[in-house]
Image: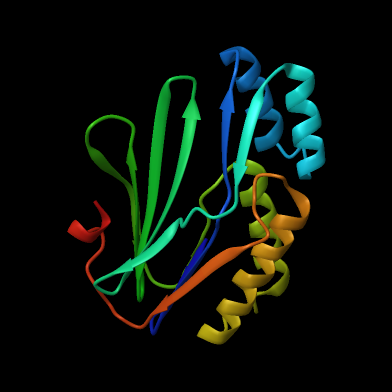
Length: 186
């Protein structure tokens, strides 16, 4: 998730990666339950996976955000059977782009300018994050420091309420206005 303001940008990303092995239809069911927030903690996730005969591996050390030439880049990966979709959020001061790759090429899906909060992830995670932003962000905006606090609170809340987000996360900031999307995003 990120905040792009006119004088700075900040991005936070959790470190969870979950891999599945087993019957594709059962994996799909488990992923659907995880992504709709029916499984709110690791114990429920492990128990449900066992019921479905799915082997899962959870690691909480994947770095999902980075900085390159003043652009903050966050990436999420989604699988749908054999199809792997990668989405990147590229942000600098006052501008952002969301790009996606499902085949060999990256495609710009959206871009914008101004001050924005943006969240990538599954529907449950996005709903949790946007509710936290609504609750803690001042109606007339706030400072870069306020945005950092909102992102931290959102990451902590998402980690408490869904098994798809790790308790550990990374956070980065930039005060650079760089062209996005640019070659750094690809």
